[in-house]
Length: 616
Ligand SMILES: [Mn+2]
Image (cartoon, rainbow, N blue to C red; front, side, top):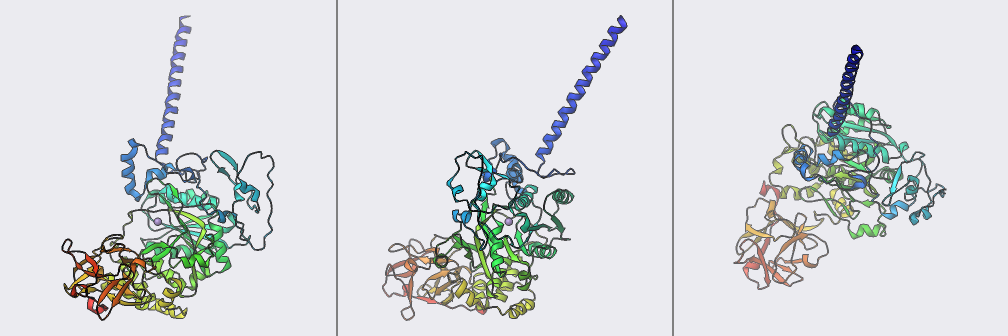
């Protein structure tokens, strides 16, 4: 009996130990999961399955992600890695949902010219749904449509939402999506890929080509390749052997792709519903049309998705920086006020566009003599327009992009002169005499070597491209570089011998006056044929009697920006106020004044047409 009791004790203690082991085993496997979750952005070894999360959670429907206070220190540390809120990005599903930000007209308009329409009859629905359904005239192509959230809580099959979309021809061309990346975060890169796959009709999406410009992060090597293998669209990863920059990496990606159209995207984008069809439809209509989506803003801080404007288009300033400017009235008139029609844009931002594969070759792809990054977007824009193509922003197509305040990229040898070199190449090849605006406002830039441009000049001849003056006249009459002008140089006061100077001040600030230095730069002004006094994209503007004289964005409407120069009296009359530009006042010696005209020497100005050899 004693022996039996002894056995019972042994069994009982064993049981306790077994239970304890099981508990510990479960506990630690749970913890592994926790750790894995924390490291989701940087998968090491084991590659997660493609993520298909239900559409609830941080960032869904493009909502901002707010990081709790106790995590903010860590958030700031992580921000430095990619110069965006990496912690927020890692919290958001790779296939997060986005709002449909298109104009109503984009959702309902039918594109196909000869497709039959069909009404979708939905049985078994007793829900109150928006009146849009009553306008159902759509052909539904896909059979495996995902569900979409309608309103606040309602889950309905996406085909109802397809009622909102335009219908496109069956035979749109296929596209390869080419994405160049360098040390991109896992979450933003894969969210780009998932959004392309999830929101592009399969039959139009040939493949995705990821071009790695010599990233150093391990998770972008084998783990990336294993992950994309499991996706339902072919995704190829090709690698640059050494750091090559955006331009050469894109050329390699384009050469490796097979679609009829090449679509370039940045590595931190999210495509929205219906983004691809209107782009391809334009290229199908005319293969010499190059198209950009509206670039929506994904906050670098919260990853909130915010619709971009269809009322801005691409331009550039004298320094050859790409800038957004308001779409002018003439372009609204050309489209008869229909904002769903594509906008003809003078330039593209460069990161996101689609182009017919053969046309990309015909017009000379990119200037392979440009290094790394910068200027290539203006170069291809000028080339498209001057050589017979068309560049458009397709307002029905929306793609989000994470805009950053600072660049996280470094380059071997630094970026210092690279952009200047690239800009010189585009100015020398495409801008004819108007390159002087760039050279005069950027002192020192003519010292930068721009290499051999003979093959690009040969291309311009071969394609019989039009002069830059044609581009300014016909494509960009509201350009910041005036098509016609009286002077480009300094504006010197006869009495004090001082010169107008923008003092590197910004929009809405007062124009300055300073000792003439004859070096161009901040003392360059152009008195234009429209009688504006311009410095870069700002115009001298007076809105009150007796001033001040401020610098505002040029509005081309004369008004407060209209100046009459009298070449005999040498006066600059501000027409609206009927006052004359005068030397600095006693109170502020660094700004010119505006007073009743007296004919004194302090109201006389010399508009000197500075030529380059004087400056350099
Ligand atoms: Mn970018």
